[in-house]
Amino acid sequence: MPEEKTPPRMVLKNFLEIPYDELEEMNLKAAEDAETLSPAELEKKYRAYLQKEKRLKAVTLCFSDIEGRFHMLDYDKVFFLNAGDNLTFDGSSIRGFSAQKESDLRLGIDWGSIFWLPSDVFGPGKIILFGTVLNRDKTPYESDFRARLIGLTKEIKKTRGITANVAAEVEGFLIKGLSAEQAYNEVGGFDLISTGGYFHSLPMDRLKIFIDSAAETQRAMGFRNEKDHPEVAPSQFELNFSYAGAVRACDMVQLYKLVCRQVASNMGMTVTFLPKPVAGVNGSGMHLNLSFFKGGRNIFHDKKGEDGLSAAAWDVISRILNHAQELSLILNSSVNAYRRLDPHYEAPNQIKVSSVDRGAMIRIPAGNGKSARIELRSVGPDANPYLAIYALLRTALDGEPLTKDESKRDRVRFLPGNIHDAIRLFRGSEFVKKLMGQDSHEKYVQHKQAAADRSPKELGSIVKSSEVLFHHDVTTQMLWHKF
Image (cartoon, rainbow, N blue to C red):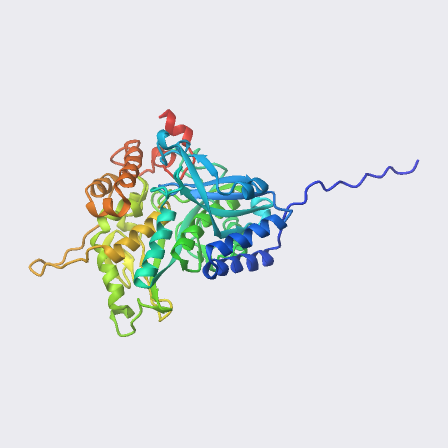
């Protein structure tokens, strides 16, 4: 009897899959176009692309709420193209975003924010764009700090000729098991992947395989990676990517965290960006490197200035130091974040500037005419990057400089040691109310108070379950309603 042949498998799906080298070229070109083309030109270009590319099945439109949680909606490509001026969603279904009476919100499309995604990580046939949150009447929604940051960067470019560049160094921990944050209990704690240390991991360790996979994904997305390595604490990592304009830098922070979480999930593990997920070891930060350019020149640089910085840079430092305590709730936005500000673990909790002391909240890295910058070390990795950069830019330009009382000796001031003190300082700050707007200021502090109320006031030495389960960056929305 002749051998029965198996019929060839039919290929039913033909969705877009792009090799990594081509992806990198496409994403870098898109970043360049975003700087050189007008919004109308960008929309025309990418609408034409979407109409022509038959292998795209959906467009992912993303936005961040006031606390920095990242949200994504997938739109059918044809629907997206036909209904792009009327994309609506229910804001009241997102905890901490809008009240029921203002539930109907719209999403505008930022066509210059396009990213092509590696199909082996995110699945084939999709691109991702960032959206602008709008009210029903299409006016900007006050609590969308990405949109407000866009407005601020345009304003300072027009009125002062200044472009703000930002580079973020975001640390995280790799944890054994899926959904490890949601399953956290304070008795067992987190189960770490590695017990190695700084720059140390065997090439095929799980931590190093994760780092390599995440870095490859980010390079393909046009992040222009610089260095990727294990950090000081066991199971801790940091993947550094190049600076960008303020808004794009924040977009890249959100995508960085998304990439890390997805790569870890694909490997059966969890990435956490809790500032201090493990007691007794170094916590995670999101160091923000800030520089101002004017006429193509870095105005923070002065080779004859103190530590190589110009008077303009020292003025910015003075204003940020002066408002540091009242800004703390924005830059350290969770109960858990205040565990990280512990001086025993290189904690940047001192309100001062230094070129060498890593306990200072602002450090001056060695730099030149291109790279001169200030490094904000006190920021937690769970901060809303758009709100953090918006607040820092507003403070850098419009805050009150620090004044010295010659009749008193210098004493080092410290950042708040717990979220309750940070909330009190935030509530009482007229400067921050003006900076954020009354409604956003009140909304933000209410969410932070609700989180604080779910944890003991004295946290002790063990990371409590409440710090993790009621953390704004952990997806436990159902649990919030059952508390």
